[in-house]
Amino acid sequence: MKIFRFDMIDSTNKYLKEKKCIENFDCVIAKNQTAGVGRRGNTWSSSEGAALFSFALRTEGKLNFDYIKLPLIVGMATLSAIKKIEQIDLKFKWTNDIYCLDKKMCGILVEKIGEYFIIGIGINLNNEIPPELGEIATSLNKITNKKYIVEDVIFAVINEIKLYVDFFNNGNWQLILDEINQHNYLKNKEIIIEKCGKIVASGVASDINDDGQLRVLIEMEDGTSKTELFNIGEIHIKR
Ligand code: BTN
Image (cartoon, rainbow, N blue to C red; front, side):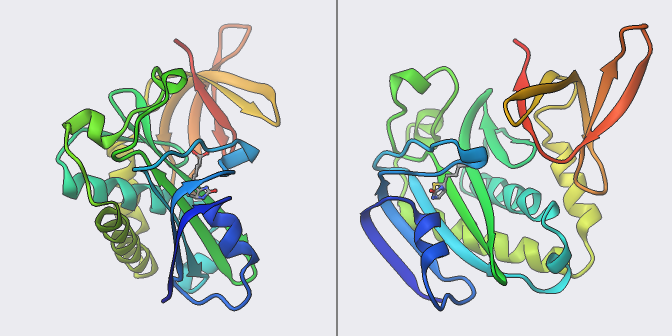
């Protein structure tokens, strides 16, 4: 495991994806990113004091076949690591955002390159939340008023992810899923699901099923309802 540290980089995910000869758990940490990448091609706004890092995870064991579950496992492990640092009420927003008091604290991007997953995580820790994001984003510092040692948090998160991945590979998906459902932010919320910029469904979110899919109860025009399962898609909560 090698650690690469940067004061400034375009994107820690991009760096690892383009690097030749990566090894399991090689890790890139940046104080700032100029072109942070979010899911579905979104940008991730970064500022100093945030935990901005990516690491490589070799596709081994059951994970070889599980590109859907891995983001969920990583999200749950990250939530668990933050909760061990501060016992605050954190929620898991499918597929893998972490929310506190209805605002996003952490985003995760899982990409695959060759035999590795590149797991990129951005946690708002000590950083200021820009005014334009004030309604939708929060930081650990905003919640607790404390300052954090960024690398301590990063290594606590990576260690927790290692534990969860081993736990998963040892056949404990059901226990992880139960924990995810206990923290399910979307449960019973009215949501809209968007795919490739188009609204494809709206309904009431339920739990996450054994395959890691979100169950959504859809009201039909004739007054009946049906349950649909979703793998990916951007979720918007009706306000
Ligand atoms: C999302 O919520 O859309 C995912 C955001 C992931 C952001 C992190 S910051 C560190 C790593 N490097 C990137 O360019 N993206 C991820």
